[in-house]
Amino acid sequence: MKARAGWGQWAMGGVLVALMVFTLFPFYWALVSSFTPDAALFRDPSLWPKDIILDHYRALFDERDFFTPIRNSLIVAGTTTFFCLTVGTLAAYALARLEFRGKAAIMAFILAVTMFPQISIVSPLYLLLRSLRLIDTYPGLIMPYMTFAMPLTVWVLTGSIRQIPRDLEEAAHVDGASRRQSFTKILLPLAVPSLATTGILTFIYCWNEFLFALSFTLGPERQTVPVAIALFRGQYQVPWGQILAAAVVATAPVAVMVLLFQRRIVQGLTAGAVKG
Amino acid sequence: MKSESRLGWMLVAPALGVIALIAIFPLGWTFWESLHLHELRMPWLGKPFIGVDNYVEIARDPRFWAALGHTAFFTFVSISLELVIGLFLALAMNRAFRGRGFVRAAVLVPWAIPTVVAALLWRFIFESQGGIANELLVSVGILDQPIVWFIKTWTAWIPVILADVWKTTPFVALLLLAGLQNIDLTLYEAAAVDGANPWWQLRHITLPLLKPAILVTLIFRTLDGFRVFDLIYVLTGGGPGTTTEPVALYTFNALLQNLRFGYGSALSVVIFSITFGIALLYVKGLGVKLAGEER
Image (cartoon, each protein chain N blue to C red):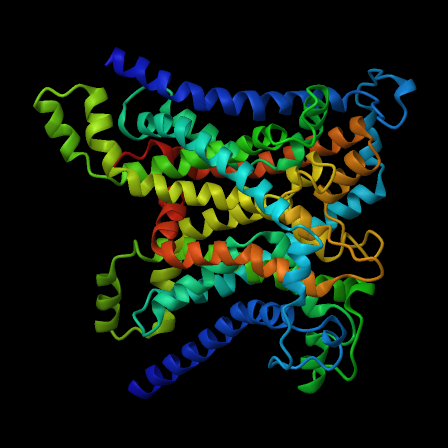
């Protein structure tokens, strides 16, 4: 009996190691290849880096001006996140703390909106933005981004605030504090971690978004990072070295954020989702 | 109580307003658009009302049915794999072992990076006959000689499915892990006392109690699968030909490549209806209980 449990442990450990290799290998390979000369990329690839060069990174920023898509992504994702958090906090407070009719319906509605396919509103948004002359502008991306960022923010934030104990607010009420005071003086400071987590999640979703950014921008001036990378073209062949360097650059900040805030992100993601 | 109700609606109003204005209103517009002939390439045609003609065209459009088939195939295969691997990962992460924190953080990274980047990483791995996938598969003897993955339909699916499994299994595992952590541990202790082996425990305790979490995950992922776009756009572009093209990519091409706004909008409505049907199942079955749930 004991021996079998031991075997089970070993088998599980083995599969887990295999899964970790599967998870990490593409990152490792992209990193190694981003330092490899283009000519050597598809000729007897070696798992260990041979001669390391920085050319791809240099070309990425000198020739391609990869700063522009990074700036665009930061502006669009940052503004969307900020706006959603501001408006979303009010809604989340009401949904988490107040009793009123129609609340369950609102939650169901918001959940339904988070799930609908983006492609189903590309055509009217395109026509709308075109008639407002907002194609290929920042507002022309921020506005569409609200469609998925706002419901996401409200949903995650509501789930997160519900987990904050009410005792302090209730005590303050007994002591005669108004609702506004209990919100600003007590709940809001307690909710700072929730706001941070939600902000990170919303930002990541905006940073990664592709379909809207592809549909509503026209050229490199306003393209976001995912669109810029996906549309990288060389004169004669696919510039894999630069693509991989760009992939490393686009991945690094997200990876760092995830590694730092792993626990909170997981809580935020699963707070609303699994309470069936 | 009445003032609380008013305050509640006041606080929710801005967020709901934004959602209604930029998400729900365009949805109605899509539907309206779908009842018209609207070719931006041919402005002289104007925008005549043609009733359900676009929908009739969809029903007879082999490329649409093929795309629907690809989407269903992709969704079914990738979700099956993700559920099995995700369940295993969740069970593993639910135990205490050295390096668990690292495992939990590491699996989250693929989930968090842009799908476009994930697709490019896998495209690069399978790219060219001199790529690393060919190199490794030949060296361990699975392949006799390097193959060109992206010129045959069934080999082109392999990187697509692998990339999706790689990117989304962490999310599945975390949802299932959250479900696992709600299971009362004394159940296992009682079963162990009665001499039940781990396999019995998995089948008779874990899986039944995990059913709600599995169901939620399944529906989340089904909806995701049906709107797959980024991954396939970058990995195969729907090719070879249009043999891996999903409905979202077909719709995108109808809209922004061919500028057929009437027809593309009708396609959008069809996709929306399919996903709405699935979402309705979710909200009806679990969501209402979930929203009404008060501590």
